[in-house]
Image (tube, rainbow, N blue to C red; front, side, top):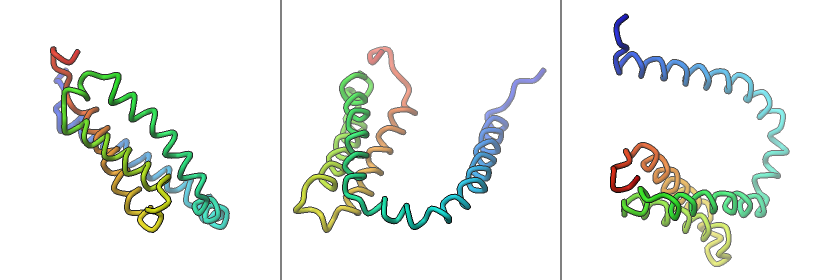
Amino acid sequence: MAARTATSKLLDISGVGLSCLCLLHCMALPLLVVSAPVLAVFSENEAVHKVLVLLALPVALLAIFTTPQTRSRPLILGMLVVGISLLLAGAFVEALHDYETPLTVVGALFLSGGHIWRWLSPVTASEA
């Protein structure tokens, strides 16, 4: 039996991912349409944003302080710190309320980018 190529694996993963997205779209879209009025009220609630940031905070802090591969890579560390800082500023600094959305979007991009980069980075012998 021949070994699977990287292209073959990528195609399989892409196919599964797209199928899952299709299924999610087909199942979730009717629910989202029906629940739009409730979601609109929910999305305007300041407490929701604060709770989500407080849920993200321990994950980011664990990624920063419990794994050597994060501390040894300044760019990843910087992305995580900037991301969580922007999220905290957007949620809790009242003087920045007018900039809450851009701060949150940029913070989430930095934070998720740092986590993805950390996840994809190989662990070297000195970091293990």
